[in-house]
Image (cartoon, rainbow, N blue to C red; front, side):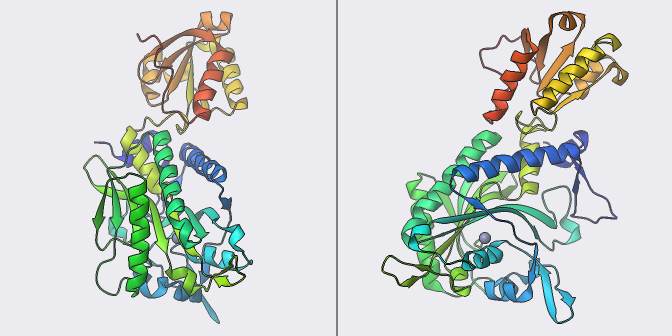
Length: 410
Ligand SMILES: [Zn+2]
């Protein structure tokens, strides 16, 4: 069973420091490369699916959360407010209220809907220090979030489209859900009291799940305080489940923020908010990816994609030239020179790097590269440009394959 904290150290991805605080990991250059690759994938998938990105501050006035309902239903998970003389501000526990206000700031007609607003933004959760460690429970969260403001008729199709985006993302990430959970409210004051609203939103999510042909399980007391959710569950090596992706239907916040659009008849109508996240928080997603793959991330996500081993000092210049060529193509390459020890030791040190190029006298003379793959396969020597082009194409396609399946294994 893999522990993402241990592999994270081996790959130099992230660390914590008591001076910064528990639950507040920082990302080293290798870790930042992984999360940026993930963020880029998400942003471009969202752009292609008709989302527009916004950017909003991580703080908001207490009143914002009183209106959204977080203050009365979610305060235990929030950091205490900061007093600024005449007003109090809080670190936001979610992005929804900011997005509702952004929607409200401009007038909309039915022709603008569905309006898909996305942001990869910071939010904060006041976790107890006892449960913190690594990236799976953190106090500062970067959430892949989006809100779709739409008509009631559009909700099912939007929820289905979000489920489809989640399916494609999991393919690129090489992960599979353990189950789809329809998260329903429980009893007690945690949830807003509006039975009819719960019934309608649950029916819409159920329809989306059925139309997507997904098997799901309904579980009580797992909903958001404002509405039910479809949660896409993943499991770690010890079969502990957590939620990465989610699709939610919300009638509550549009009402609280008095959102509207002008309908085809010229009358004011209330939109529905669909909250959705493709990979959830970047922190939890990376923790899961590291553990699921044992650190051997798909090439497009790997912190170092190609490692270059000059056999001796004599091949250093050629190896450096290859590294520069990689950098110019946007590939993350690193040079492991002979100062790091014997070739065998260097290869072991780079065991999680997808592509490994050994440069000996033959390669220097021919301008060819003899590639080893992380899984032990060796590729026949090819001109360096061809090798880099092939790797680049697999990375651009967000493939989980290292090479063609037909390659000669040895
Ligand atoms: Zn939301």
